[in-house]
Image (cartoon, rainbow, N blue to C red; front, side, top):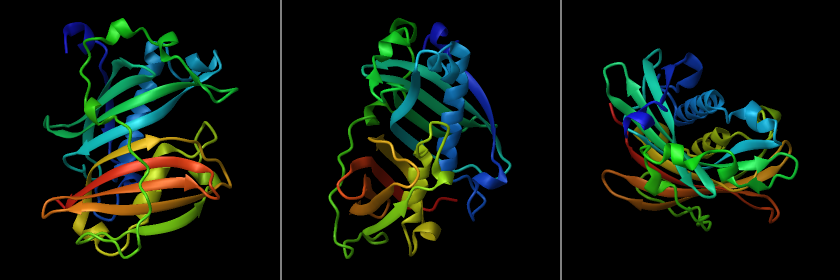
Length: 267
């Protein structure tokens, strides 16, 4: 990253709150994802293409693809710095990168993301080039950009299908008002919370989510019924990989496709 690109890096102080941790007193994966969205929103506003700026032109940002690698889950009350920056265009997407750094300089997590600009009145995409000057971000580092690819929606598996620790599962949920965000649709990290809630057995105590990739394909709204399912794909002594799908009930189409990699819980 050259000097011009470095000047576009935003630093967001992060403190791990009690409401962002799980039973192990460490931040949850959905909490980390929410930090990313908050930092992205703040920097976009500072650069002139934030929520209010786009709203003046009947537009808003939608997160379409996300890839996150977690090297260590920070503990309650830990203070860190979250760095984010626009990482150029890959039409139809605007790319954004993230890096979460501890107070000692340790890289705790990294992420890459791909965003669409959507017309509020029609819910249809608008060319991202009309919002962002691509040349300004040509030299920016693209973190995990190679993982921002299409994720197929997995076929459902027999509930007997399993790896050593994780089993296939299915469930149905109804979208509730508490699931919605400022765009009146289900928040992206709510989907990840639903998926992680679907696991039973040893997963919460013996495994942790090392990395995840998500494709967001369609909105859901209050009252919608959605079906969720998880399919284990592969397991070794060091990694357990699987995929999850979320779809609207009664043939309404896919909503989210996700790839998850679990590892034995790290100290």
